Length: 212
Ligand code: GLN
Image (cartoon, rainbow, N blue to C red; front, side):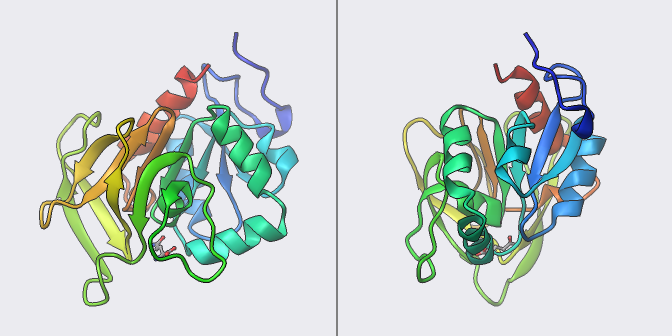
């Protein structure tokens, strides 16, 4: 049975226009809100544990993972977030958000932790200084309708994945892994929120509708 969404957050339960949060500590929050709304969700900012309780799924935006971690720590959100992810809440991380969902970082900044949730090792700023920013057309498994124009900004890549992780996309250059899914957790190295192509957000909203 679909739950009852808080009136404050709009939405119509999990099945119709589900309430989906965007972790609103740092990063491109407004862009994800716009993308989620365009993809059929009722989007809201999540800054406190009570706000997390009212959403069926959560996006962790691109931004700066060291800053996002510091703010998660200051606002005491690590445990509530880890618990919801462990309980199977659908979660989508783009770029810094992908870093936050990694079980392992080979090069964390001093004191930097992640939330974890995907059995993968993610290298931060992996595509290097000369190519801080670039765009590529990617074929993404589960995303129909032709290639997806992917925007990479000081992007991480996935260095290895455990057996339960599905590789959804690799970049055409060196074949680095740039999109993965493990159960109800989805992550991309790039920023689908910065284009007007909502197919990845639509995939995520569908995961939220399906998540029991
Ligand atoms: N390099 C950033 C980090 O380490 C991620 C960049 C991004 O989200 N655009 O968090």
